[in-house]
Structure formats: C-alpha cells, structure tokens
Amino acid sequence: MTLDEIKAVTQPYTDKLKEDFIIDRKIFAEASGRANYNKTVREKIEKKVGVYIWLDDTRKEIIYIGKAGSIGRDGSYKKHSIQNRLTAPRGKNKATNKYIQTNDYVKAIMTEYDISHLSIVVIYSKEDEPPAYIEALLLYHFYKKNKRLPKLNNSF
Image (cartoon, rainbow, N blue to C red):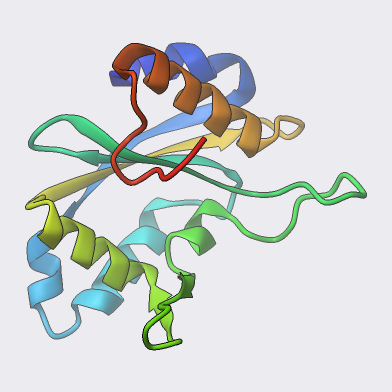
C-alpha cells in the first residue's frame, strides 16, 4: 500500500494523516539513544488516538500497522494515545519476565531486518471513529493486495 492508498482508505474516518517522520537506526548507537527516540516521538506525535504505520523507508515496505485508543464499555476512550503507545512498554519478555520498552523493540526490529530508516506514519481518528476499525480496514486492504499481513503483524 502507498501513502495515497492509505489516505484514500482512511479519509472518511480520520481528522488528519500526519506525514511520516523518520527514526534513524544510528540514534540507538548514541548513549542517549533510547531517550532520544522517546523525545522524538513526544515532539512529533500528539496525544490523540488513531493508527500508526511502520514503514521500512529504504524498501518502501509497510512492516506494521497498529492502533492506540480503545473504547470502553461506557463509550469513552481509554487514556492510551499513539504517543503513549510508541513510548510505553510492549509487554513482558517471556524469558526474563521484564517489560520490553518500545524503544528497545524498535531498535531490535531495525537491527533484525536491517532497516536503516523507519518511517512512522500517524493517522488520527475522528472523535467517534474507533481506531480498531481503521486499523482493521488498513489490514484488510493490505491483505487483499498482498495476500499476507505486514511482517510484524501476527494476526488479523
């Protein structure tokens, strides 16, 4: 999927598509690389709900489609913005039982798949549009076009 295709699919449900910004793998070689990753995310991404896409910038390949912002039973959003999602822990490592920080996860993914530049595309949801629906639309269109999911999405 291209950015134009993403815009076309999401346009009715979103406030705006924030053009991508790039995380350079070299940032993690610095002593303050983890903190610089988090700082960059906080500077570039608003505390809003929606969908984010990780794109291998060199290969122009979508490697992950994710969302932030779940709707509770009472209809209100839980307080987990895209900014928070991209700086919060991603769960526990089964072997060590320690939390995996997103910045460590991103560094590991970039190293494993030899990604020098990771573009992050952010799509903010309209107020009454569930991010899970927009994520599902994007995964559906990606699957129909490619007959597979992005390499980091485990299921749909």
